[in-house]
Length: 417
Image (cartoon, rainbow, N blue to C red):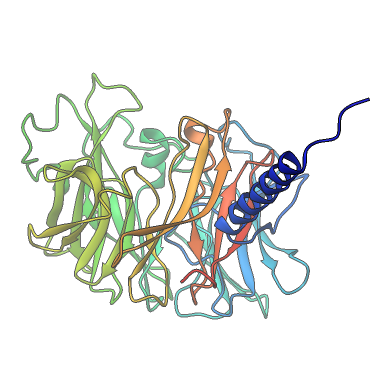
């Protein structure tokens, strides 16, 4: 027969149990509420972080649906595009399909800026890529004869890189099915960045690879031997007066995983081009306002960190250099006057992707979720969380494969900011 515990040890046991429960409760309060808004057997994700995923009311959340994972898209592979109704049991509403997509950015599915009921996505028709624009209320649909990457804030103009060349130079960002006619050319003069009239579909070649490659790289060593050039990551500023694009290249003796980058800003008509970041390391970015860019890059002052650069100058400031120490997908939370940054990380040594908020005035970091991401979610078909917020800044949506297959998850941040 076991002896009964003494009163002292009994009270100590009660205290230890109470402490453990208290710590568990504190840990539970550490993270806001998160819920899956899509479910299997099919997989769902949205993709990049600089597109409107939520409609203006916050009720509908766009997403892509696919029935396989862990391999590159083939020309015959198609996916469904749709939206989740958050006010009707997270019901999936199918909107269409596409043969032009990738794992990182989907098919550029997004709500058309300035519209409360139109969505857009890219597709492939025959030997060319197109962009569909669908009114989700009436079902009216029109198709532009060219794909679109990003749209001006008023919804009037679009921009597009050469998705054929992207698929050749950076798998995971272009579209399969149409080979690059300039595959063997280092700096083509008949391709680059197009500007598209979102009403008529008319397009104009605004900037060519040859023009940008002719701008000397000011860093030591230059481009390298036989460097092949491409463009990616286009984004208008908040008043539509200028946009960003990344000029990337890879020398002939460098691995497919190696490339160099410099960031250009340019007027909406293609004029007044400025190399705002010549470092060669430019990564994720958004505009803070029409004259400032918030980006992750290298600078001698703090090495690889987040910075705010002033356009057309060499003025800069580091953002969270002691807190946001690793690369992530950074945006500003709407409705907070740019005081709150929404960000994430790539998987760390424990295979965790950290989604968090960062308060610029105080330097405070607020965790939102720590989501497991194990192999095979690496490389081209990795599942980055790419946090995106609703227009009012109340909710955040992320992609994650922590439960065994990529799905979309909603995080309520109303009580945090």
